[in-house]
Length: 305
Image (cartoon, rainbow, N blue to C red; front, side, top):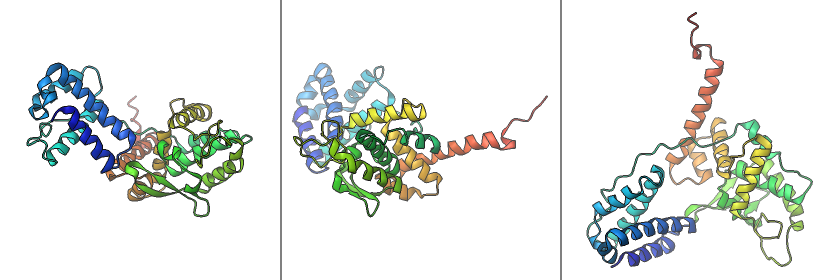
């Protein structure tokens, strides 16, 4: 079997059996396409017969990338290749898995970006409530912060996904896993305010029940949401680097600071692994250290003069 045929089988497996998102599928295919191009140039026989591919060729590919991309990018490519060859081994397409001994570079994950409570409130209060667009933007900011939603989850919300009475939204997360997310009174009020004016942006030419609409009546795109969050971050908190995921991080951090358990936060955010949620404990500890250093007398160096 040649490399392209093996990739096609793997892609079909991800799509039909794993219910992988389009973004995940695209990432795997992009990484494997880069490996295929490398083999075509350096080891054409392995591209034509994937059973001839070995660990040294894989290492050679990664070495060729080392000066071009970050260690985090290489680690992702290693994960893609491992998953690909593990699939081929389980399906008995390959007898030996050449990626089994492939090592991933150690990477230091940066702490998640988040806002303090006052800055978060300033961002949420930035949109004007006198226009339909402003009410829409207030609703999207409240849902990102109040529900800790991913930007793709927010963009995919339909009107029927919001339960006003129960103060919760039904979300389709990664791997097409559905979950119910509680949101606060502030978010529900913002959504109600937007729904009362949603008809001003709706178009008779576009039939959609998407919760959030652009000015042409179409569902609000992920990229547009990212731009809006950046704009209100700069306007409300002087943070032009603000992005939707930072509001998700902020939600989790403030819940943790308020006494919520890691398990509860994991369930709300839809994390598959508790290890992902545990990153927020480091953020909270950093906040505690800053307060301690500023307030505790023993935190300051003793004056030796």
